[in-house]
Length: 80
Image (cartoon, rainbow, N blue to C red):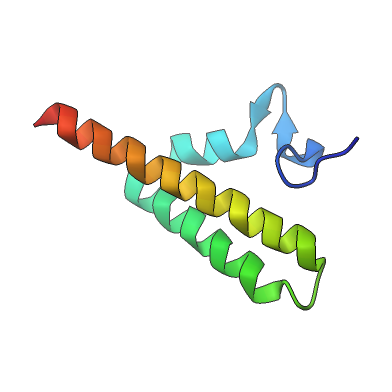
């Protein structure tokens, strides 16, 4: 079964997830902005395109943002 929310096939190339490549290329603050922007994008368009799928994608990015923030907070705590 195709999972266009959690692991879309078109975002994996050579065993590397696109989101992981984006995170590696950006600073933590830039990546946070990227995630937040995607939450906004998918909630903005949900009434116009694939309502439930768009909301699930927004939820996926929000969960990733929360995980990212917790990881950053834990790193700051360890560095202190």
